[in-house]
Amino acid sequence: SDAVLSQGSGTFSTRLQQNVATDCEAVPTGGGGIQADAPTNYTIDFDLTCPAGSTYEIRVDTSASGDLTINRDNFDGCDLPFGGSTETSSASIGVMSGSHAGGTLASGNLSLGPLGGLSSAPDANLGVSDSSSAVITGNGTGAAISHSFTFSWDASCSSNGDAFDTGSECSVRLGLESDLAPNGLDCMAADDYPGVGGRTAANDGHFVDVIAECTFLGVPPTPTPQPTNSPTPTPPAPLGTLSFTVATGQGGFCPSDSSSGSFLKTHGNPTGGIPGTVCSGTQGNFGSGPLAIDAGIPDIDGKATLTLTSAVVLGASLDGQTPNCGGSCAACWRFEDDPSQTSFVDCDGGSNADITLLVDSNNTSAPPAPGFDSAWVSVPAGGGDDGVGAAILHVKAKRLRINGSSTCPAVGDSAWNSVTEETVALVTGQATTTINDRRQCSGSLFGTGCPGANPYTVSLGGTNLDCSNWNTGSGGRLVTTFANLDENIGGSFGTGDIAQVLRLND
Image (cartoon, rainbow, N blue to C red; front, side, top):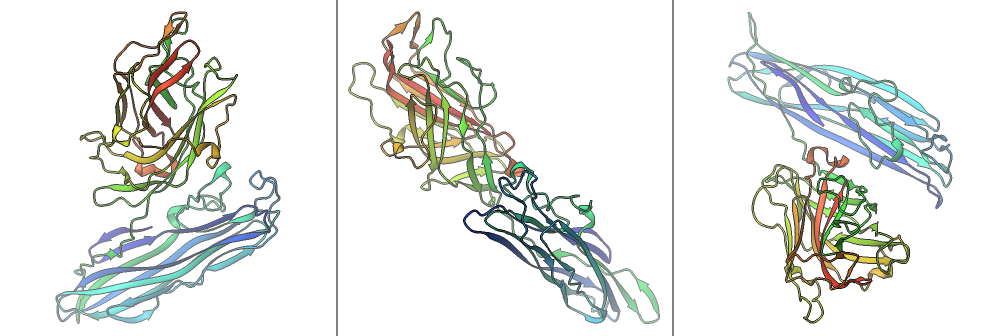
């Protein structure tokens, strides 16, 4: 990360921050390790204008300050069931080479270091720093003269473990936290600020301070140069991976739309009578996941592509009184990425992120229900602007009901092989499922029966994602649509249609 700290007539200051970090947990297959090498090369470009016939002098001060840290996981809960490593891990910062273009180097140099190296099996920490100065001279022409400084170095970390021990955490800190992920149980701390040594992030990094002035022979210096700093821009980085966890939801027969957590909302299943209004298809105890959602670099329109990086299974228990349940049963969903569609998150707004599913059912005297048709689904569902962070993630979905168990089949289980695949999308806007000419179940029990409304329709809203806080999720909601046609509801109720909207809450 680079920045211009200050700029004025004849002067400017810059700073580059860096962090290199590694951590290797136990490798029960026979030992191993991980190493990260970060070669750094960046250029500061600026123009200097002095009157014709004058000379100029540029005074450059460079400095670097940072810290090398090795932190051993030693029976602190992060290395279970193994012990802390006795293998040697290492951190280093090599020579920070500096060069210039434009003018003549009159004295000094722009290089630093090498700043230092650290190798250790137990905990170790080494603060490092160095500084240098140089003077560059030249002759003014009345026009802008181009100058540049180029700096390069290599920083590296290694974490080495064996078949029984974790590798020590390693970090090279130059004013930047790495936020190395995943970081379950806060088991990566070597890359933090203030961290080991109680350091101040604002004081660490690679600093360059420049002062320039023009001089006529026999005339006092005049502060007329106009250097314009233009560091080589750092290419934008991808947003990275969002670990979208699946929160549990509210219990009860019909939570409100504003209730917290995940929710399978339905219309068409038996309702009324003794239980009262029923609109929830589960007990609300959603589990498994998370959804690993990878986001690329936002384009000129602010859109970053999204990918569900791996297939995932989610599930929630059904009520134990559900017909044919066998004491316990579960609703299960399997999602994987649909590469044939372009998924995105809009980081500056302007996109519609709604989805609708509209199907005409067979009513009661028609032949068997048709199989899923992708033409039923519209996404995005119209125009409009769903705001900053609106997202559409196209997926292939499969659904199962498991009787006699509350555990859903794993992602690769053969139970999924014969299940119909549905092409839908997880969106942050509004999801609406409508079944026209619906089939109402014919039975009832103690005043409980399937609703007489026509059509069956159900709708839930999502919540936008946060591009500025991508890796931590911050409570987004994804919604999608499903329709069960000619569903065997069981018991005395018979067969009927059910409209569904699934909401997943991070």
